[in-house]
Amino acid sequence: MKLIFIGPPGSGKGTQAKQLAERHGIPHISTGDMLREAVAEGTELGRQAAPIMASGGLVSDDLMVGIIKERLAKPDARNGFILDGFPRTLQQAEKLDGIVAGNGVEPLKVLQLLVPDETIVKRIALRRSCPQCGAVYHLEHNPPAKDSVCDRCSTALVARPDDNETSVRKRLDAFHRQTMPVVSHYRSKNAVYDVDGQGPIGEIFERIEKTLAQG
Ligand code: AMP
Image (cartoon, rainbow, N blue to C red):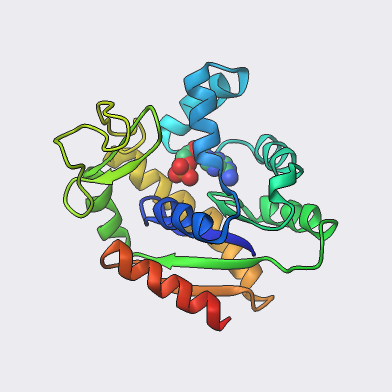
């Protein structure tokens, strides 16, 4: 399975993509997670990306394509992968098509999670994540067992620096202007599967599995 997860920020694509990758035994490749790791480690990439991410802007296509090309060349991605957060622009999509073309016959599929903007703005205000292991919670729909502490590693949970309303509105704007053309690009190849991203996490997961099995 070579799958691209597309959805607005806070649509639950990270949560769903992680579960799906585990179920199918393929890597979950999240460019947002890779960048956050680089920021936490203080690498040159992290230093460049941090202010862009905090403001809700997009890191340059050249940088992102380089990161993904290197990641997809690793042996664990040979039999499939789930991309989460990439491609985010038409240029990234075209570059990705070129990278994947030399990499076996299986075509890319795109799973689009549909969630309205106003639901996103409300959801993101209640999102918390673990700075240590990356687990993501929602204070109402998927709360940690103990207040503000990660279930897996007991680290204090934090709100992501880019999960404030100004940044979220900017990320939504970038999504509509720059990422929706990616959906159109793959729709013209009949590769897009739309799934309603509203409701309980388990139900959305079942919808995704069912949609992919039919496709
Ligand atoms: P995410 O966790 O996918 O919401 O990504 C968090 C932030 O990382 C985004 O708001 C961007 O600033 C940056 N980012 C992640 N993936 C990409 C990408 N493919 N292209 C450009 N910027 C990205």
